[in-house]
Image (tube, rainbow, N blue to C red; front, side, top):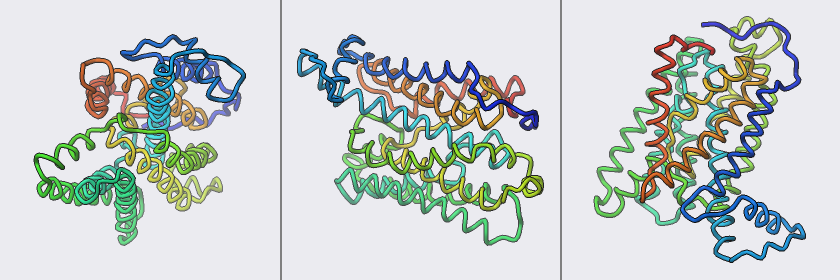
Length: 345
């Protein structure tokens, strides 16, 4: 495995990074105009400007405003936040564990959140309680994996991954038990559809509920991104360079867990984003985490908006996001493996 180069790298963003953020703006516009109800991009900006309080007289039909502001805008913003959050989480975990094959779900957060959501669907009708239950059990699953790894004397990151595998399997069995107990005509279809991931029911209130926590965690990972370069060299080398590896590892695990649990709580389980997009980002900007974290954020946001657009428009009924991300991500990752690019691209 090749590690990031020790050559000094300019902090000035390269031209590729600027193009990535220009792509984010373009994909944001695409998400708002793309759909079965035609909306011109100029009308979108007039609607957004008027909604922001600017002195713009849109003079557009109310149904057009409702489509943009109440249907497409929450979905596009949620897709950008969730896609960016999962991609940054995956990149951070790949550096933390020094393994390019791990994803944000490696410590069991998806299994825990899935069990929490299924339990919430089984017991309550409130969407808020279901989201809270998914978030809480996602945190519990990762906390269990972390505590389990601390009970062993063995040091290193492998024991944390193994504890995550055990915890994930345990919560997956609990999820299967809940699905077995659920009413097959009422509750079970809802649980199965939730587990496949979707943004169909995301509202602006859902987005605002998770935005503060996800924003703080993204900011935290952005601020320590240079330390992830050091951590990829190993604990001893990190200490020699003045980085406390244990505290940094704990902080990154907490930030990634909160990011992932928040994302899963409002969208369901969307796989492959946090595994594939960081590799795409490395191919664009290289392995330096000072550039990789922002690039993963931008690419992840663009990627999930495009996937969500395909889910809404490919067929008459909406396709769950988890199906499309796996359909696109698995072959792409197979190509990477076939080319031997399982290290830091």
